[in-house]
Image (cartoon, rainbow, N blue to C red; front, side, top):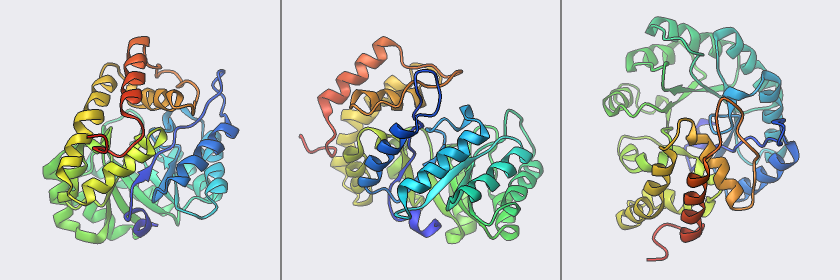
Length: 304
């Protein structure tokens, strides 16, 4: 699984909801088939973009099982897992029961813990499943390089580290200490912004929320990064990514809401976000609509 996802761009599908905020399985299936046709290396069911934090454990399991059914072994499916240790263990076991190929371990709920406590949490989840585990370093769960190294010694199925911190020194220290023991995934919001410098640090791939509504652009930008095509990278940043992130930064929680808005704009509606998130305001939605209309889903730089 780890080797497979390191080969190419990753997709984090939105979780489709009806107007009354129930899981909209038919639309989710249709959208996932569309994403799979664009050829990501793996899909992450009920991840951050998929509103993991707003779903019940039963819903997380249902979204994961549905993703496994739709992908039919064409690529790995990884499931979101998180909250406190007991709940994370339960969710990890549910992911395995649903047929997932691995899990993405998101931060525990609310608390700030010591390195010792975070290590105990990660180890407990790893020991509860035979699936490969990717640790998501971000927010209140930032595990330092030495702690990750100790976990790698104790947990053979800890296979990856996703970085949502943006601490370059920490990433360099971790990569230097562990080398190819882990697969490294870029996971900052709108990961395209950081893709080029992260590649230089040995980060094998990244997760693209843009895959939900502009897969051709996302694919073209990824290819440009891998080819060190600087003019194309700069064109993609200038023409779409940086204006997009400017809209995203207008509101708290817009990192998810803007993806659902983009999907709606291109005719692939995923429904509203669940509270406490809020959908884009009217001005931001209109600005995103104009940006997408002006750019279109083409590889960056292709119109220059």
